[in-house]
Length: 108
Image (cartoon, rainbow, N blue to C red; front, top):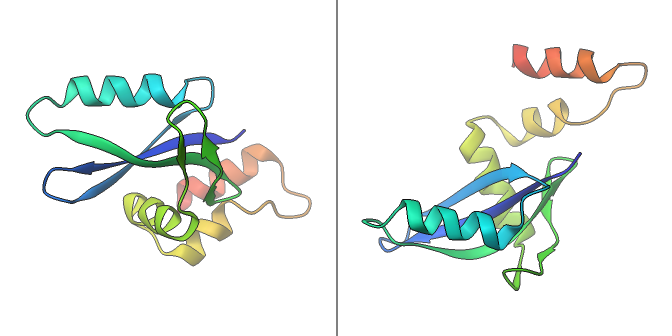
């Protein structure tokens, strides 16, 4: 299952990637984030999907494209792990079940 994400930029220029389930529309999620942060205006600057540990795609509802390298770097930073560990934890290994992969991720 893929996840969706939106990268917001605050008025100070800091960027924040927020991931959410794929059944929520990008524009609905962005609207709720903007309403929830009235004292720190947040503006969406990119959006897409997290697929195989990479950020990619386009949000049709926000009319924003992903920035594959920059957004994936923000995702790794948000998770506070190295890019290699992130890719390794999200790459299926031959003969491993989904539950085994989940347990492996929790260990890291």
